[in-house]
Image (tube, rainbow, N blue to C red; front, side, top):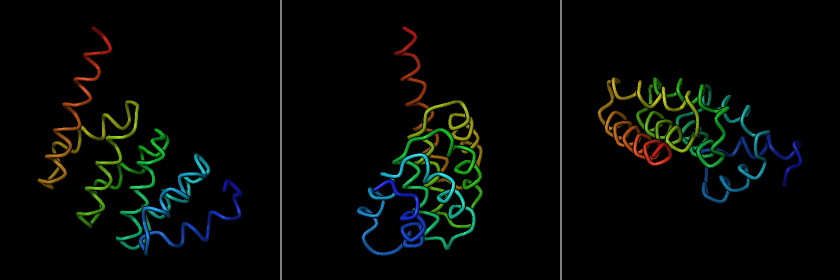
Length: 130
């Protein structure tokens, strides 16, 4: 694990069988998986886009926040939901701003999740500052 040459074939399997095992393997590549995952997030088939968001959530790297924020406008409701859930796992202001923006969005499921995530972030922030 970790050899960059092994990443493209794995990325090509996103959205297919055994997603949990594949998520773990791709997440093992760490930051070097972010760019190919964000490419799939914007160009792949819906099942691959959803899976890419899930892997990005596992990585919890704030560098993925802009691509996940863009995915909040995806045509597929499953991709939008996976994106907001992934943003909830990411630290940083970009992820927080995207979650706040999703509260005003048109998808009621995404909006509901975003409200809960924003409240959770607020509680965590209040605990850290008290």
